[in-house]
Image (tube, rainbow, N blue to C red; front, side, top):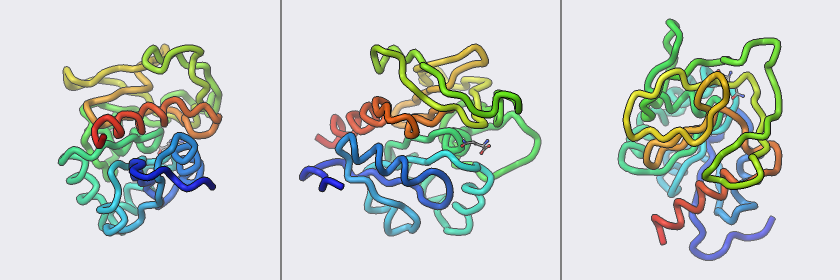
Length: 202
Ligand code: GLN
């Protein structure tokens, strides 16, 4: 693996459960200094964080067990950029379209429905039009994916949507994708996220 360039943004991938390795690889391909985050010390050392896909109830529970739920929330509230994908989108939302409570980071003003695409279409790849990422459409995987059911603040930008609703949103420095951008080798979303850090950190 190539060593990141001097001054490359340090991007953590929350490494409690989920597809951590694929995100680390995608981030490295776009030039970030990507590192696993499993402890408070590791969290303190990163400029930005990626929350991988996986199982949001498990990751939420583990965030509590590892004493990371409040520290991650505090850092995001203090301005640390974050990109959540799939389960990561669920964890970032302030509200879920379900009665059962589960631990959430709760920093993105949207309501999300888990497993929104139904059992018969649990997994599928899509060429998703994301105007901000240009042409051609982005190749992404939906795996038991959530969807945004309600946007609850004016500064939430919908960057991409499908028939069911928004699947890529951004509220300031908080980015969330319902799909997996890290599985197909199309790294444009990771590149845009890392590019936004370069603009901030110089
Ligand atoms: N359905 C999962 C959840 O609710 C998310 C699936 C995924 O991350 N691929 O956590």
